[in-house]
Length: 171
Image (cartoon, rainbow, N blue to C red):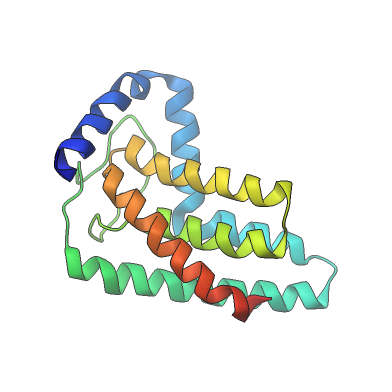
């Protein structure tokens, strides 16, 4: 089975859930929270409140998250130029229409970059929460029909790899 068939089969399985108002609201929220990595900047800066050392970590984290975005959105995506499942996304969801190509998912990449780095800064149950949130943000992009399953999987791999490279720079 080729990757396009797997992507299409996964998309078809999600279609019934797309009609549910709660699902629409949840995945719209997750997708929008991932825009410009807002959720990840909020997390790291909330952690920094009251600590000069943590503020330094937060600044480095935010700068590296910006670098990750440039690498993925202005670098890797230009190599693939894959079309999106729906150029405007699914109208049932309240999300911004991206201008870059589909592979790899920038939301997924930044989410797994952030979760990888944050898990080293705040281990334990919080690390699990970061990865659950990253999975939710990544899946939201398939749910809103702006990415294929393979886009978010590729983004997760790229983001985690870049996150592992960034860990020594942050902490």
